[in-house]
Image (tube, rainbow, N blue to C red; front, side, top):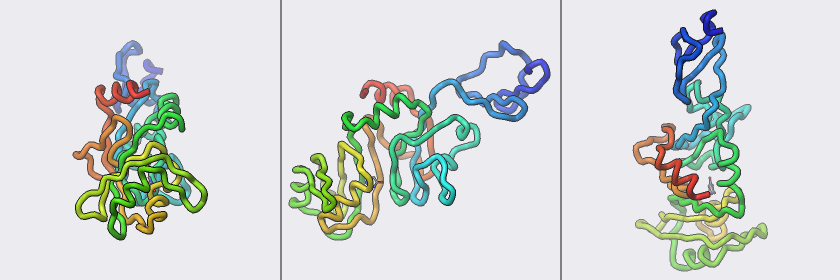
Length: 214
Ligand code: URA
């Protein structure tokens, strides 16, 4: 296929079958991109208005924010953020890592910046710390609420990730969420240089920290 000129590497026709290419190189045969063998780990600043899915008939997905060469690598988001939540989202095609990170018993810390309607106070802090019981019967694990200034803003750290969890916890306190952004997940911190919609590959240090966590 190489001799027949059917193979390109990063858009350039390959001329030798023993050519060494990087793990991230985009290899195409007859214009079709081959899935890369190496696992890929991306940090995305998920913007609001985009769903944390790989496919969706109606909504724009986080995968649509990535260049073409990443879309065929089988990447998927590790966990979900609501459509109107922004912030740190890890995308990978390393199923084993995702599985371990998401295992309910793993309790990977996730920290969010939140703005609510109303004023957060010590009673909210105590309720979060002791494990809130929600109206639907869910008993939350103890969570940390660090109230910021102004006091309708806070950092919330969860050790679990149930559906709409922070929104439901704040609703239970009568203080609906108006804005939510994930800042940290385990050892990863959202890169402040990434604007909403921007992404980058994890550094070696970040990858090592992630694997070290497991
Ligand atoms: N809690 C929520 O309510 N929504 C998110 O997207 C993440 C945590």
